[in-house]
Image 1 (tube, helix red, strand yellow):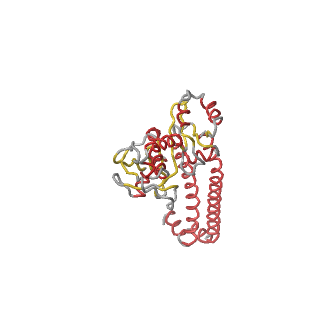
Image 2 (cartoon, helix red, strand yellow):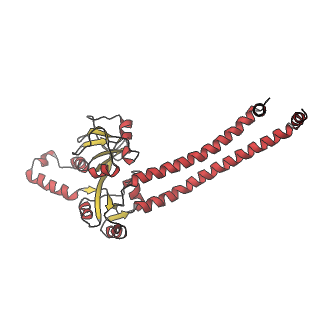
Image 3 (tube, helix red, strand yellow):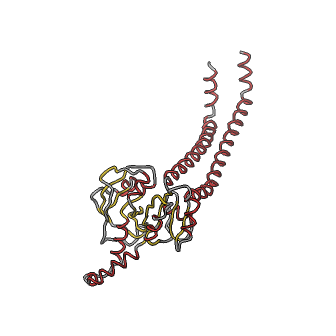
Length: 318
């Protein structure tokens, strides 16, 4: 009889104890691996979503809320800013590119984002089917959204106010799906993308003049001018032209009336420090579980050796 075969038979002489020890060891190793993988995936996902974004500009409020709403799309923005602010910031000599975002509506719980083609170029988005929408009321679906909703190019849907399914639907101005995006592993997978003008058209139609007023040419002209002056954006994603902008541009933005600047690198580091506490707790729990499993195996082996001392003595004599 070989040593390995003898050890195997000793191990399964008590199958319940052996199975319990193996289970505890597996849980300990599995917990450590799971926590490590989840933490790494979150960090890599955040890096992909933050790629190319140097500054986020929005309404006065919490800088962290601006990052969660404008970059990760995990929160509700605090308010809107005038559309003229985008032109003002884009004209700054230290700004290379400004990507506008208009939020507020959703479809079946997925966020509709009015933006420009620069937002797609920011993440290098590619189409999987159809084309990318450039005209008002044309929509492109992220890979996750397309799979969850079942919408395909050529179909139409109505956006609803907010992200809940009970929001007020804009049935008079439906969107038409013109394409779906290839999976990119970034935030675009979870968004419905359309032109910024689409969001304005939807809300101006919902709050526009009555049909009788719309037939009046003078009133229609006044209404168009009023809409142009009242048009708003939710957030602006800014790229710097030079490293000097990091020191001066945020202070310049914060000095403007109603505008708030948030640095994604700073706020994301603060967020991960907060989340890191929970990750460290989970990792510590996994280590404790692994240590307990190791002690359990050690105690079980010690008892097994003591119980089998006569057998071992007989083996030595033989």
